[in-house]
Length: 402
Image (cartoon, rainbow, N blue to C red):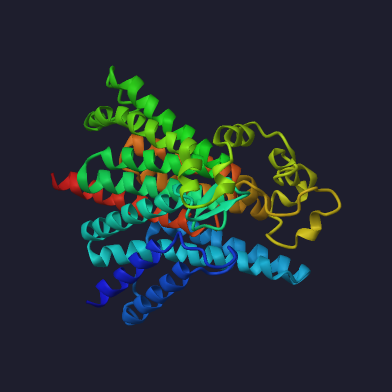
């Protein structure tokens, strides 16, 4: 009963992950509730806590956390910027969440745990999209929808991970790719409505994976697919069939919005807005406008890392003083070669655990998103990694039982 209670709290917390009530830099209701579940689990397992092992796959994530604490503490001592310490606290919470989900799943029972969250993710995905595409939620600039999120990129990032999680769990417990096909088709409509360029880049990867499956299905080449994976080919074409009407929703969204009295959005041209976002060559799309220029303007930080925060350090030479808009470029600049090494090895370990080749290819979609947006502090990034790992573990167990 105690284990079930912590599982229920975790499920409700993750179900609330789209709800942003305060500034993005502050803990949201989902984080607070999840913390309650985590503390309750620790209290209930207090006697066994010292002897309880952590998942070996998390070792490199913990190494990254430790190194970020060392770098950010050093920066804080010199510059007294509290955001440097907060950055490491975010990483600590996210990595602990990753470990907690894996541990509680093993206590709960992996199959039932995945089934519960499979339902949770489906329900929340449908609700969030209904809010977004009917324009009942928030918007950025009057035309970029973002449902209940604070930012369109947060919205797109969440949709991407939820679709990938549903794909992984659907394959693990049903041995079917249809859930993933439908989930990605639904997510695509929301991502295009958000006009997130990072999200659209990730969608390109998803479509390329589908094309690779189609191209190599005739020869049954095991370079891309195992023999048992060829049932994917039967449903991959459905993705394009389902996507067509769902993507069309983005162009009739103004009409839907007008039904709810949002004339500002109803008068916006979805075609023009989409073209403007993709073809934008302004400052916000340049290397300087996204902070990439720090890599060559401040090369002294590339080995050990500059740490996060204390952005006044860049004022003399850089135009943009916020965070670097790329996870991999940002980690290299903030945490140097050691930090980038720990992160890449951790992601590689996750990638190697994925059950099928097509799932390994789909994993590049959120990584492609990461090239254009710094999403490492986003809670959903680590939640997604945990569920990909668990789904792959269940798929392996199921195959061995057969």
